[in-house]
Length: 215
Image (cartoon, rainbow, N blue to C red; front, top):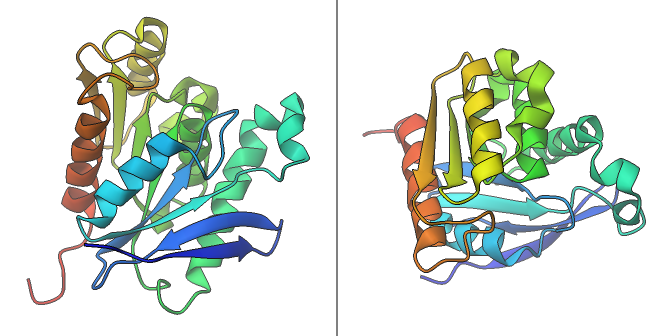
């Protein structure tokens, strides 16, 4: 099932994005990429296509402008990145064709921290959060404030990040789970690893979205 992708512009900061909306979408997933990446992340785009096949709209967007992306102070400024996630949320709420969809967040690496900061700031607006190989520890002060059900997915061979996720899991007070993908490293490049991420994320999002009308 081919789903059209529309280039969009988040006007507050001139950030570029790519929006894909399947027919009768059940929800919208905002993607927050990791440091050194962009909306063009091959891994995130692969997961996005898998989520679209499950009836979820997706918005992949740049967290930084090209000039900002050259500044390490901004690349690792989690507060700024969290505000950019909130900007994408505001943009989605103003667009008629997706404004009524419940919103989920999918964050990778430092983008996971940005997603959790946004979820803590707007608990009433976020249905669920998934972190892929994330650094939720970088959102440490915000973790106890997150109310959205949160799934942390980490590669079994990503030892240091796995330890940080175990720590973050203890700080979260929401519905939460840590899933370890055996044999996977930080980028989930091993055969079948990214498929596992997509399946886990789709199941988590669909479980925590409101039931379709008439279901």
